[in-house]
View 1 (tube, one colour):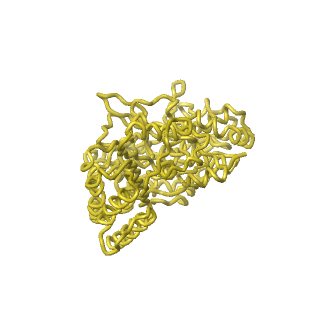
View 2: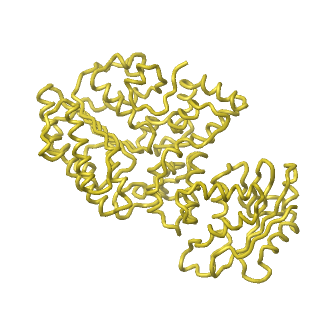
View 3: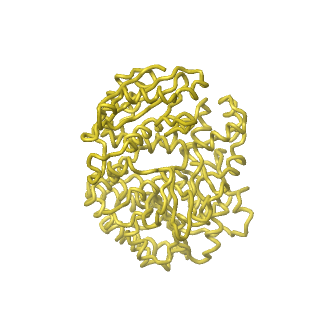
Length: 533
């Protein structure tokens, strides 16, 4: 059985050691063939989505390493395998603790890449000057135009986003570096730049008017990520084995795998199920581990804390992340470092994806899959509760609930609601829905949609929220405490009087009613109570 590689970004290594390589070379061939003399491309995708492996594959392709591509799609085309000089940059690991540190590490990285390409460098000169000289030298020495591959071009800017002044200084320095491409366009055969964000003010996008942005292009809809067909073609045996470990029949297993890890769409006019892609890292990690549960994978490899710096706490609780309508392409981009939209950052980081598009109505964005849903709602809830990145706090809160330690649960809820964000114009008129949405975010971040019912519709009765756990059912009712009849006891009475529990007895589990009452003046949890039903 072929190896499943979870961390490799090295195409030659994968081909030599027998790792599973999902063949994307037809798309690469199409891009090269469509620009027979010169092609300039940029593509943005979330982290760990195969960008580095694509760069490594292009590197081998342009170096003419035909033997590595035996049996792949491009080997069945008329590609004639010319050997080009290749300059390959990777800016993902550059430190940005200070501007001086950035300049040193950026300069060192550029010099190393140019030397690896066989160019002569002068450490006394700027990175841009050495880059331009390398393009001219390699082109003249080989008689062929140079291929330039830039992996994570935007990483240093993204790493510094919590320090706007530093990010602006880094942006300007990198902009000067990228202008070398325009000045030496006649020396370049092919350019591919990857990144998480498109900072359009970086001069590469304004100076090179012939660079094609593939981020939302139909040609690249499935270039990164795995389709259903690819999953079945390359990973069938591993999925059959995992289904057995999970104790599921194959179709039920595939449905659960799709629910957890599939749902990204990257092209406005390619939104059918055949264009939905799985996060490749999530698939590789899940099938390599063969554990009897579906669990977070991609989301455990890093927490984008810089996102939370750009999401106002007032915005967080009001967004419907499942259905963001009327979104423009400008809002999804990161054009101006001083006014990056929260929606744009979430989209580019992989927490939102395209659900629908209309030329007049714009984009509809939503959460791609269950893994991302839980991670995003956790980040949002932690930020609101002023516990950023605190998984223990979240776990303590949920564990107190499911273990029926209601005093501890209420104590944690009090901390969560202690500083509930609201618009200044709302004053004391914060509605019950605002309090309820935050409770939903907290609970839904740990449980899937089959367990959590938000304003559940029942015959003539509608509890605010229901959680069906494996050994108990919890029914929540919320009140805004405007008088003595709006306390927690009144909430419990409503659960009993309207018989919210009756349809839930079919679960044959213990039932608990939970009443919460909020003070409209302080916006805090003012009263709480729980009882068995």
